Image (cartoon, rainbow, N blue to C red; front, side, top):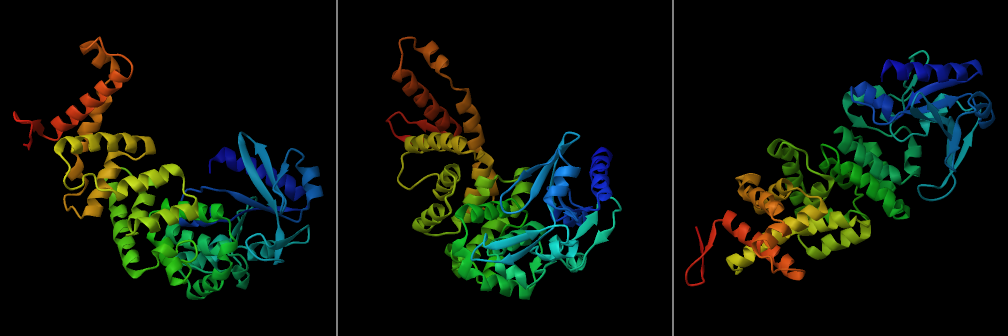
Amino acid sequence: MCEQTGDELRGIARRIAQAGGRMYRVGGGVRDAYLGLPAKDEDFCIVGFDDELISRVLPEAFAVGKSFPVYRLRSGGRVYELALARRERKAGSGHRGFAVEFGQEVTLTEDLVRRDLTVNAMAIDVLTDEHYDPYGGLDDLKRRVLRAVSDAFAEDPLRVYRTARFAAQLSFSVEPRTSAMMQRLTGELETLSVERVFDEFRKALRTAQPLRFFQALRDASALFPHFGAFGEEETFQRLKNLLAADATATKALQEPLSDEAIFAMVLLSLARDEDAHAFCQRMRVPELWKTAATLLRQPLFEENLSLHQRAERVVQRIRKLERCGLTIREYAHIRAVAEGIAQGWTAYAWLLDVAEGLRAIRGEDVMRENPALSGPAVGRGIGQRRVAYAMNVMGIRYGRDGSVDVL
């Protein structure tokens, strides 16, 4: 946090303190600070205040959210999100089945106890930098363990997927009692919206250890209903092998894999196309992700194709890859892993040369060589030149008798 931002926050905290309240930094920002990680999110909790005091002391703040009072305050070019301290009690089923109480009498400890994990239940006073850790979050950080703050963990089914995602994000293990609470929540997982589940899944794919997401769910017998397709032992072993290859991709390719590529690797662990399709349908996977996964499930070549057909297939595959956002390097890496090629992605390095040459083939070049062409004929001419170029790069030449030789 830069010095200017700190001054702005302390200025807000002073106004709150002068009116009898306290402002605390809470949640993931505190956790990440202890871990020496850059804070992605900064959340703040105000104790000793109610909505009337907020309106009077911070009139420039505006309320957002329907379930409980959260305010946004713009200061110095930044927008801060401030929440009043609150209590929660279970009042129904599912992720949203809670009654919320807030007011001047709610303490910091009461606010922190409603949080999911001890590592997310720490606070720092914005004015004094005093640290509060009533539930042992710092010890759990040192032990690299995810532990529920209280039995109230088992009241919110979304915490099953959040905890699995944190296991992947932080490379932490889930404490056995917490894993048991995750298992008890499996009956409520169907109440979650697919969008919320997919959001946690997507975040897990972006971590350095996405396999830990699946492992945490598996340990808690919580792969069903959303990730049940990965529950078979053979499938899970393939998933482990594929995601182990993902861990080496950054070094091999000198760039991290995209979300689409990692998702495609996950789907490759499913041996049956119908299982992959059903998973995409259930999770309402984005179309680009589905396209990428489909392309990567298919070998580049099939048996009994002529070499001309192979060149056509290469041109088509490159165009489809570009449309769905996958790079040639990603495709080459994942196909090499899927096919068990020890040489790695460089076995498909020639695809980079083909792709570069295809981009240089333009309609005006075709028309310059044959001015009589127009309309669809130009498109066909471009296609023919692309296939011919692909054949050259692949080392393919037509023989005198019309047969095809591979050099």
